[in-house]
Length: 254
Image (tube, rainbow, N blue to C red):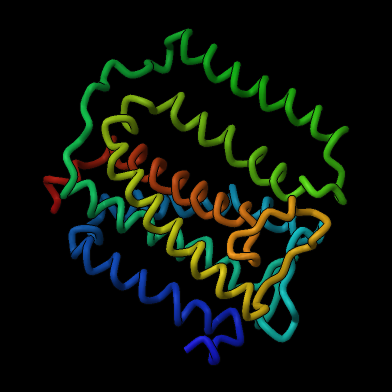
């Protein structure tokens, strides 16, 4: 089967479509009800807004790239297949999270979340934002475009603060649901890391060896790639739970 993986589109058909169908079968028809679809659509909008500039910047800086013969057309710096990847992965995560919320018990122990007028919320958010700004100013001086830490910095600086903000703002919603979020994160993140390893082997995308630390999984995949898939899955699963909490109860729909 690997012999036939030549283009990015074929990668989607061979790896992403089966997981999408499997997750959809687990989630069942309840996922496609109005409130859930509205939640999913909102999460997709957030994911696209969040990920598009991050990925385009990385390609513009040459951290990774795509051979011209492996994709169809580009929009800005990215192949359309890459934008499709954002959407497909997010739907995979949401489908699995939705199903896991129906079969796994909630952890419990949370409650008494922030009120929007609670000064502690403002302080907590301000601390994260100030730390983010401080790290950005430091990194701007220390991590240049040809540093071997560039990919790691670009990844962690972009994702970690936003994930922290999710948990700071909505900890009372996310914490009881952490078993489902963690299982979906590990499931999708691990599967896509494996698929990514095979895609790198087939040359569907490549990395600038001067902008990665050099530590690789299986001597081919930068560790930063695995962290990306896990981080992106965690972001999508937690955001789905956060948005869904105000609109419906999963166990009642299932």
